[in-house]
Image (tube, rainbow, N blue to C red; front, side, top):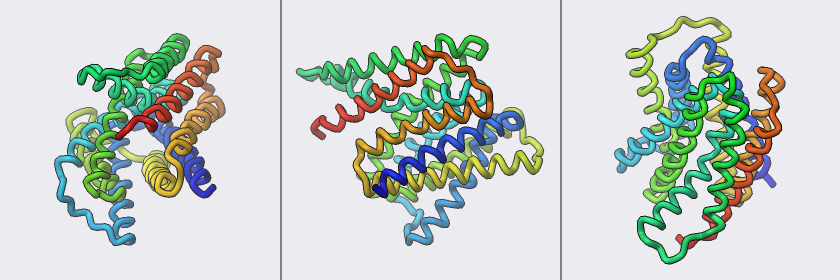
Amino acid sequence: MQAVVFMVLAALLFSMMGVAVKLASASYPAAEIVFYRGVVGALTMWAWGRWQGVGMRTRVPMLHVWRSASGVSALMLWFSAIAVLPLATAVTLNYMSSVWMAVFVIAMGLWRRSARLDAHLVLAVAAGFIGVVLILQPTVQGYPLWGGLAGLASGMLSATAYLQVSALGKAGEPEARVVFYFSLCGAAAGAVLTTLGAGWHGHTPRGLALLLAAGVLATAAQLLMTRAYAIGRQLTNATLQYLGIVFSFGWGVLLFDDPVHVSALAGMLMIVGAGIAAARLRGRRPS
């Protein structure tokens, strides 16, 4: 029961981070928001590691580089999508990561010429992409198409990042160290892109509060989710994380007057169902 509470709270905090990012996007570009989120996350995880007795020296630096490259790229694209799309749409497209992971499994099976291709997994992937079409068809009208593509790409890159996190776990890297290097690389990438791009923006008390909130909410949610996966059932946690879409939909309608389309709601339900089914089917596959 404790794991369920942690996972629900994590989904709520991630949705609140999305609200903070969307509000901050009115004053800051995605790269600059990623920089401040990374700074807050790196400092928090360094302090958390010290408290837990976890050092930040690593024996597998290149694994962290590859994980951070895909994770930070996904974060940049996701924040860009949040800035220009309805909040629930951007969040749902990012949550396509489970479906993308199923795509990778299918592609690997075809490449290896496996004798048996799971038809149920193929159907889950198909349902996920039908859900994307249902969401984007009414939603993108009045919104830039690149925002939808950015959200979709963020989900794909998130899937590759999760695979690399799994590799880091098998290498014995603790979660605090993984999140620390991810946050550190995010801060570095955000600083470079901001300096080379639009440049640094001045701050207002409201702007600083939103940037701080985005970093604190994301880090707290990450810790709660990590704890939930440590003590709870993986499939239950994977299912509960989709509450983030529900919370984001509520925030979007309440705070941003986001439009409500029946086809978009149907698409969200299809993506949630496809993601849960893909997670269940992948969990049954022999490792």
